[in-house]
Length: 171
Image (cartoon, rainbow, N blue to C red):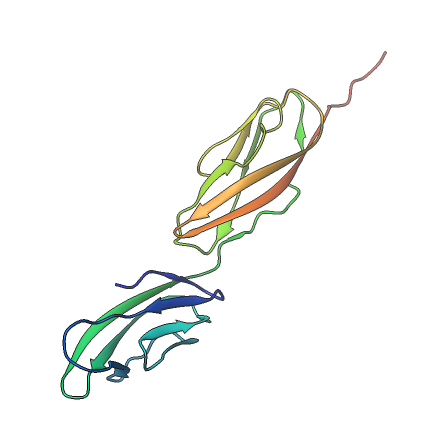
């Protein structure tokens, strides 16, 4: 299995061989091919920008002019990791329970959320699964920098959490 790639991002892996004599020449053999956007150069450089996420299996052959060897390789291309929640999440109200699940797509399919800097709004906490919850204790508009990770990818995103106070009836 090759090191993984990320859809739309540059990928390079130099294939190596040992033994034999002379200069090696690399080719793709059989009907399967690397992921779209990835190609194999005769010097063994597997490179390009994968355009489609998914897993590809293909066979490479190395030849030294008198003998050859082949190997089945697997390359997994992860979809680009993206936060799909709005940048400004729904408003909370001081003293009232609040719960909002942050959402993402891409990556390896499981997501881990954490605070990138500073605390969340007073009274709220963020779970590793992206659940922002608690009972807000202060009003304001709170910018919360977050780290979102999945598979090989790490994204820094920022959300804004508005917190208001409930109206009070004055008599």
